[in-house]
Length: 580
Image 1: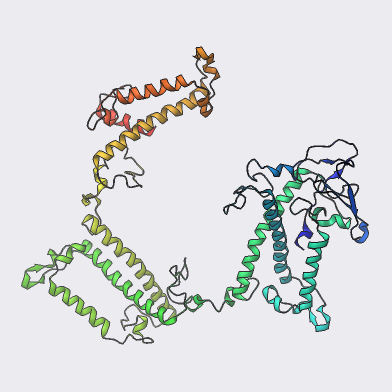
Image 2 (image 1 turned 90 degrees about the vertical axis):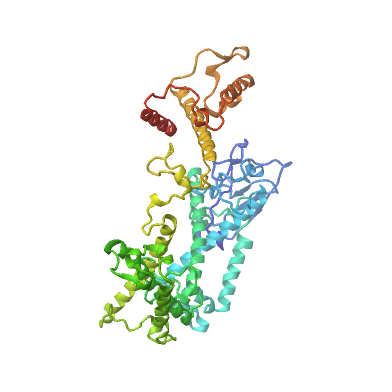
C-alpha cells in the first residue's frame, strides 16, 4: 500500500543500437539496448487496464538485464540496476537520503559491512515505512476537518461520521473493513508492485499516475533527484510525527493530544499546587512525585517550607551584622563574651558557648513539637499561626505564600553559596584576597594571565600548585607557540610573496617553485631536506642549557630582536609575542 505513491525510474528503449554507460538513480537518461538472442530474451506480461489510460505493457528482461515500461518508456526514463552500488568506494555516501546537516548518518553502523543488497533492502523498507507514515499522518489530520458522508458499513448502520479519529478507530472499524484494508495492501505488495532493482521504484511513474495514463516520470534528472530527496526526508519526518501522534493519543485519548484529557498523569495531582511557577512550571527532574502519592508530596512540601524558612533566616543572619553592626552588650556575661566578639559566618560556630547552642536547639525543638503537624492539620501545610505576612484576601494570601516558597528556594541556594565562599576564604563575603590557600594564587600574576578570562586553567593542570610543573608547561607552551607562528607564516607567505628563486635540491633538479604549499609539500621535499630540518631543530634544542632556573628554561634563548632594555616594555613584548 505504501508503494502506491512511489516514483518511477524505468529505462527506455532507444532507437539506435548503441548502449550507454549505466548511471546512478536520477542521473542522465540511459537508453536500453535491444539485447541479442545470446544475451537475453524479453517476456511480456499484461497489466490491469485502469480508466482511460488503456493498457500499459510492462516488459522485463531475463535476470541481470534491465526493465522497460511500455514501448515508449514514457513512465520511467533512465532506469538502471545501479551497478555502481556493487563496489561502493565511500560506503553509500552521496546517494539519495544523504542530506545536510547530518550527511550519511548511520550511528548504528548498519551499512558498515558495505553489503549492497542489505543496504538496498533497508532503503526499500525505509521508503515503504515513510510512505505509510505520510499517509497515516494525513489520516490523523484530515478527519479533524472532513469526513465522508454516508456509511462505512451499511449492514451495521455504521456511518463514517461515527468513526472516531486516531487510535480509537481501531475498535470501531468492523473486522470486514480491516480485512479489506489488509487484502488491498497485500494485493499492492504482491501483485501490482514488482521489484525492479531500485529501492522504492515500481515503474508506476510520478505519484503512480503513470498507470492511469495521467502522468509520466520526471524527465529532468536533477528535478527527479530533488523530488526523491524530498520524499525520503518527508517520510522520515512523518515516521517521527506518527509515533508522536500515537503517543499523545494513547496518553490523552485525543488525536491532537489535549493535555487536559490526560487525567491519569501522576503530575496532574500536583500541577496546581503552590510553587508551580514560571518559567519552569511543575519541575520535578528527580521524579519524586512520579508515584502520584499525595501524602509523600505533602511531607516533602512541609520539609521544603521549613528548610526555606531556616535558609531565609540564615541568609539574613549573614548579611545583617555586616550592614547594621552587632547587638550591644554581652552574649554571655558569665564568660565575658560580647556580641561584638562573635565573628560573622562559619567562624562563629566555635565562639558561641555550648549553652548558647543548647538554647537554640531547645527553641527549635519547641517550635517543632509544640503543635500537631500530622497529615491534614494546618501545621502540616506550614501554617503555624504566624499571621504577620498573611492576608484575609484568598488571592493575596496565595500570592504571598507563593512568594514565600520562591524566596525560600532562593535562600537555600544563597546560604549554601555563602557557606562555600566562607569556608574557602574565611570571610562571610568571600573576599578572594583572603584565599591564600588557593593553588591558583601561585600563578595568577604570571605572564599570560590576561583579560578577559584571567588565570584560565579549566583542565586543572596547576591545581597541585607545583611551580616546577608550571614552568615546564610554560616552556612547552612557548615552544609550541613559536613553532606554530613560523608554520602559520610558512603557509601564508608563499601564497602572497611567491617562492624563492633557484633550486631547493640541485642534485634532484627540484626548484623551490616545484614545492606545493601546505601538506602536499611533505611528499615533495627530499629526505635530505627533512634531515636538515630535524638536525637544525635538535641543534636549537640541545645547544643551550634549559634546566630549571636558566634563562632558556623561561624561553630566553638570546634572540633579542623583539626584546627591550625597559623591563615594562620587555614584559609587554613578551605578552604580545605569546598572543601571536
